[in-house]
Amino acid sequence: MYYLPIIKLKNREISKASYLKDYFNNPNVFPFLELQRYGIDETRKNKSISDFLTSTGIKSYFLGIPHKPSVIKHGAANDSNCFYLKANANNKMYLSESINLFGLSSCIPTFYIYDKSDFLNAFGFISKARKLNRTIALITTPQIAKQVIKEDILDENDFLMLDLEEKSIKAYKPIIEEIVSEKKCKIILIRENRKPSTFNTAISLDEQAPLLPDLSMNFNDPSLNTIVNNLFGFGDYCGSKNDISTGSKIDRSNFFPAVALYQKQEIPSYFLGIKSEEPLSKGGFENLFSLITQRQDTLELSKIKSVETMLKNEKHGDYAFWSVFSQWFYIAKMSIFDSWKSTP
Image (cartoon, rainbow, N blue to C red):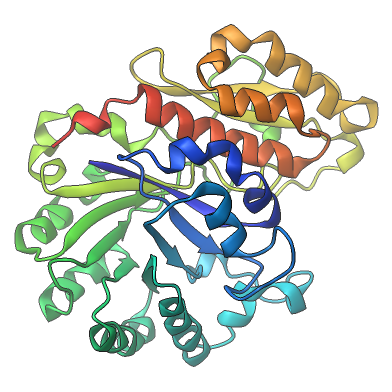
């Protein structure tokens, strides 16, 4: 069983990637990288995928351009610098940019299918893969995945990712069982862990944060054995959305920074909420840093030396740092403590 952390390659994720080098190269971890703001040929320092690959040394990974309707925000700020927005200008452009992913020999190019037109364009993507003799992945909904299996367009070395969005495995159990029973390719389950309506204002200090539990919690359920025993792995967005302040309409000067950090000391696992007791206008980030360091033993930071080092050595006075910290913390704890590695 493999764990696929889905990492949106923003500037801070790229520049801080070296801290998680050992975990990205864990034999049970298979990163799924999403190009966000910069193209694969970007040359500016700390802004290209080559920087990420050089600093981590990973040899195999999935690579895709986000094409899920809920993450495509046309008209967002700085469109001229936002690679994935330009790549989604239309379906023809998305296909063209996705085919460019084959330019990186070390990746498994990944194509997103979320409607009928995407499905039709996928044939062009697959055709290119066959000419190049390349392994590929398709990420789609369970409903569309049934059609993918029916069309028999993937080989046994290819991957089919089922995006459960915010739902549980049991919510799609009949469909997933049908897919895994007919599969020729490798099946991976993907799910969001944080609902769009979850803001930091809903996270309380030292309380379980309102995030969905990780998928691995389902794997000990005997009723799901048929599914789990046929999975290549599962993935999520590293335990939370990438931007810890997404969706907040609060005046930032009175915003209380917060993070939700993965805890695996107990069963079931949960996310511990750590919310600054001071707003940004009164040193909110510094207070959040203090609260984290006060909980070193509870969080078992001493067992995650690289993340502990990042906390000590990097400036922590902005949202981006805490977003990356929560992701890296989650991936490391999943690698060290979780039981999914022993799942068939």
